[in-house]
Image 1: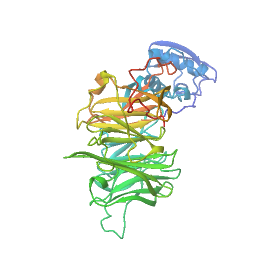
Image 2: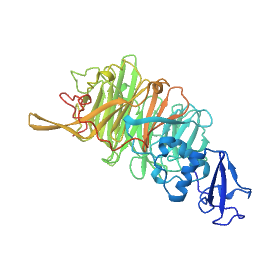
Image 3: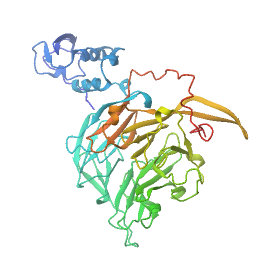
Image 4: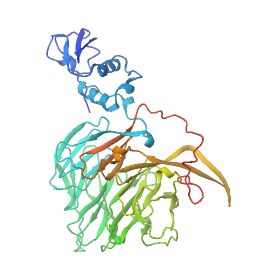
Length: 486
């Protein structure tokens, strides 16, 4: 993040007038107004001082320095990222009101890409608490507010497949091709953890398949897999970087016991959710398992294929699955139909899935069997990447439909689905990963450099009322969508 420069030129009085030539336009102000920028520390008394930058943006920044406010029309002329870039150039701390507005999936757009300085193809990244990009055997750090580049550290790994920050200063990284979980600060290696068991000779040379930076206030978790398919999730203390518990050990390498590929912590209910989806000669197979780290017990699981036979969904196994820690639901996409199914974390049973059907013909028919699909849940929204397209399913706030049924009235929520991206965005490449961070969405694509950053514009009307007629967006849950209204 840009820092505030308090050094002043000793040749200038504290309230002396100063002339600036910004991109050919003359500005007159005082050194007191400019005291939080680098301009007063320039080693020249020749005026006007020439700075080769955009004068229109500087005029708005001068208003910010004088009155701690920006002109109301600034985002009609400049993008949010342009403003942040100029703030960083002049060394001005961005005010809190410049943080991104609440993320609206239907009004978000691609604003920039974070491209590390070397080997820019991203192998893994995390944006949940701080922005950490893994590329080749390096990890790069970015400021989560300004998106400015901070530093890069070279690890001892040739390839990084998992990364997760466990504190503001330390990140955990793992590799499919190298054993152990390794901890790096922004400067160097600070430790490693290995999964070993002296009573089982098969548990050795374990590699990391997933990392989540939280599993409680003081611990985090990582999934490990050994050469013969044995796998488990380890709970690790953040302060000591030592293993404190092992949960979910599985033996063998069948589809039902393959290693966890995605881990997420749900703090509202204190649960750890792990999932694994594989695609082979006979199609997709996957499972979801949920643990309570306090008791170290598994509280629920589902396997596909396997488990309860679902006559209407037989063979439509999950192509990808995720959990929303805020909305407390699971979301999956069927590998055959492409339909989105959800399940309430508080009402899980033998067959908890209900499926959203989209009656909007303009948005149907974009699914091909065995197509690439990525599911990510964030802040009550479900984001789905289908090949190169990015779509969102979002709850329409304060809109419900009441129906008479067996047992009395039922209230059903309303959801709507739309593409987040434009046609040219989808053409950039196949989506490989999606992650929400703050009020932004981050996306990587196959063989495309860097991480895409998506934001809602400050010009968007976040309070505009929704139209009364939502018939195109009401979704069937058997009869009508009851999606996250449990």
